Image (cartoon, helix red, strand yellow):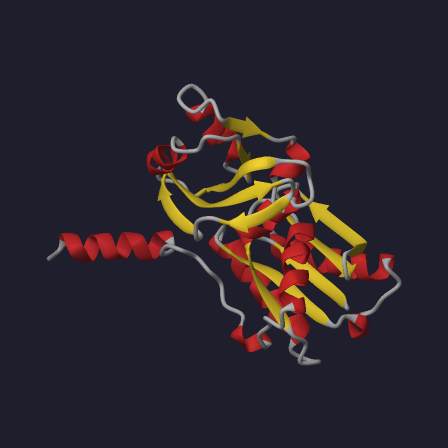
Length: 237
C-alpha cells in the first residue's frame, strides 16, 4: 500500500512516501520557514521523485500531536485535504510514538523517553520499553513538569534513551542526577515522517484507520491564549 506520511509538529517539517516497509521517497526542511510554505512543495517533490501522482496514494498518515499548535493544525489540515477527494483511509499518529519508532529495530535495550519542549518548565512526553529493538509503550502521551519526569525516571535501572527536540535540554538538566540518561545522535533525535510511516504501517495492518473528517489534533493542553484567558477569568472570581 502506497502511504503518504506528514510530520509538522515542530520546527522541522517532513514527508515521505512508503510502500509497506520500503521508503520510496522522502523530504525534510529545517530552515525555520513556516510549514504552510514548505509542506505542499515537499509533498509534490516526494511524489514526483517516486514517479507517482496523488491518485496513486492509497492512504495518508499524519502526526496529530502533541507539539506546536500551529504546526499540528497545518499538518492535519493538509492530510484532510489530500485524503478527502478520494476518501482515502487516514491514520492519526502520536508525534511522540513516531519519534520512538525511529529506533525500532536498533540493537538497544532499556527505555526510550520521547520529550518535546512544552515551555513553562514542562515537556510533552511518553516512555517506551525497548528490548533488542522491539518497542512497547509504557506511559501515555502527557504534558508534565520536567521535575516530575526526572522523579519518574529515577526508578529506571537501565539506559534511558532521550529522543525529540527536548532531548538536549533534558539531558543537560538531568545528567548530574540521572546517570542513566543517554543522548542519541542528532539524526535520530528529531521528529521525522519516516517514524510516522512506521507507526502508520502497523495501524494500517490492524485496520485502525479513520476518515479524513475524523482527523483531529491532539494538543494535551490548551493553547497559550486560552490558558491566559482562563487565568484571567479565575483571577476575576
